[in-house]
Structures are given as C-alpha cells and as structure tokens.
Image (cartoon, one colour):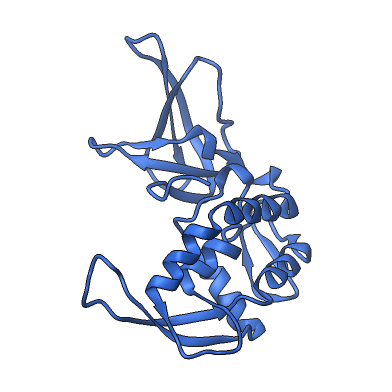
Length: 213
C-alpha cells in the first residue's frame, strides 16, 4: 500500500507529454490532464513511460517547490485493472496491517453495540474497502443496509476531540465488498457498474492501492 502522503487521481487522460534531458543525465517526464493545465512530472531514463491519450490512475506527492511528483509505482493504466485481483491484493495488504488498525480502532472509536465487532468509518475502509474510493465504499454500505451504529471517534493528539461518526459491523464487510467487485462490469474505460450499487465507481489497479482516499 502506498504512503498516506500520496495523493491519487483516477481516470486521468494524459496529454502534452514531454521528455527533456536534465544536467544530471536523467530525463524529466511531464504531462497534464486533458482538461486542465496542471503539470505532473517524474524523473526516469529517456524511454517513454506515458502514452498520450491513455487513461491512468496516478499517485503523486507535492514537493516543497509545489511540483506534483508522480510515484511510478503508483502509475497504472485504468484499462488494465483486474477487479478481483485488485480486491484480493487490497485484502492481503489490509491483513498485514490488521493489528495496527485494530489497536487504533479500539483506542479511538467508542459505540454501544454488543452484537459483534464494529469498525469506525476510517478503519472499516482501510481494512475492507481500499480497492474503491472511500466515498463509494460508504455509499455502497448505506445502499445495501449493512449493519452500523453511531459512534464517537477521538483523536489521541487532540484530547478534546469527540467527533460523531458511524461504525460498521465487521461480519459481512468482506463479503459485501467481494460481491460488489465480483459483480462489477465495465461501464466505460475507467468506470465500473454493478447491480448492487446505483452509481458508477472506479476499481483501483494494484499499483494504485492507497488508504489515503
């Protein structure tokens, strides 16, 4: 999984791709989306990496100079996404983080449910939903009526923070996501649709998996 400092963009159509030599001997690769003038860049050798007009999921950081630096390990063609493979990879990554995320959930999320284990919104998504966007995950769970309860989320770095939120029952979360991904069919080069969910949604490529958003 990529760093939480990584910003992500889905379905970016690469335009204005250029490669220029740097004094260091490396090459600066730059491109913009088809619809804006925002520049994204990275350093590599002279071999083209991005194809003009193709659709990409990208991950990038913003350096101190304000430049958008693409992480090449988080660059993937949307047309090459295998939904179930991405889901299984996301679950594998989540299981590796289980102890850390559960400790945070136990410390920061309080609720009154007694019928099983419940995950606060942020942690539920990190453990079960990172293969799709965070907003789509929450909206999907609401549409299918997945069991949830009101909760209070506290930030240990802010002693007086008590944010009202929602916690989701653990049982059924993985199955719900597996059903969504298994039923997904392409609605466009970048978006999928499913009879289980009313909206189109993106499924991230393995290289684009991140728990930032």
